Amino acid sequence: MIPRPQNITSIVNKYIPNEIRGIERINLISMINVIIESTIAGDKEIDECVNDLKEIFSQFLDEENVNKAIDEIIRAIKIERAIRVAMMKGRRKFTV
Image (cartoon, rainbow, N blue to C red):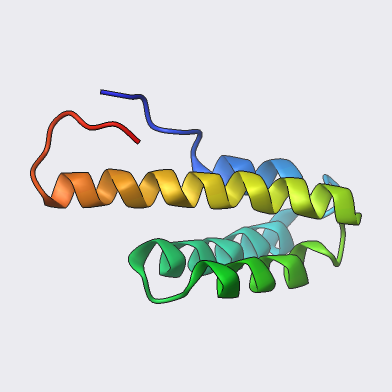
């Protein structure tokens, strides 16, 4: 069995600048996690997720870091989806 990827919240937290603190940081992370979870659940398409994340991250990151953050998050979403599908099918061992 493969290890799970880095926690998606940790990935998001890594790209939010340290200047954003307290409740503002928590709200931002929560908002991004809602977008991510709805994408993992299938309520949102990947393209919609990318557009929403670009809109949020572009407020405080340059274009290169926005793209890096989104690539890393989308990779984690795809892995998490595969893990959840495998768990629903009752598989104990699977590859992504």
